[in-house]
Image (cartoon, rainbow, N blue to C red; front, side):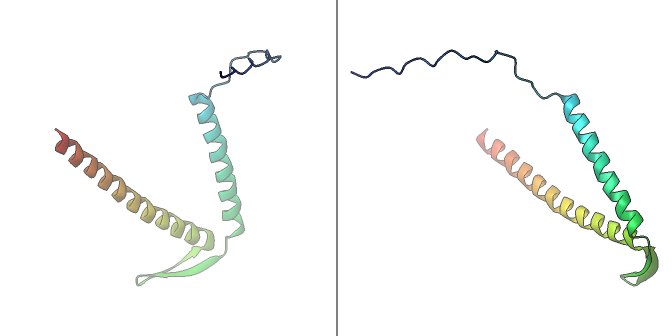
Length: 103
């Protein structure tokens, strides 16, 4: 014979409904995060104001150091985004091909 475990003791805490995340809460958190990123970006731009000479593919010019660094970061992010988009398109193509094969 197997014994059944005893029932758990009654809970002394109040049964309050659990707080659920809402879209408004997510939007608020995103806005606060975005504001912090902008503050850090403004500090970066203010601290890196000296002009530097930039040469790229035969083009020469003078830019503030912060702007040159920011442009290079944006260019890198775009390259990563293009690689990610190519992968997403590849996966979508594979899913469509598999769906057609099933039908």
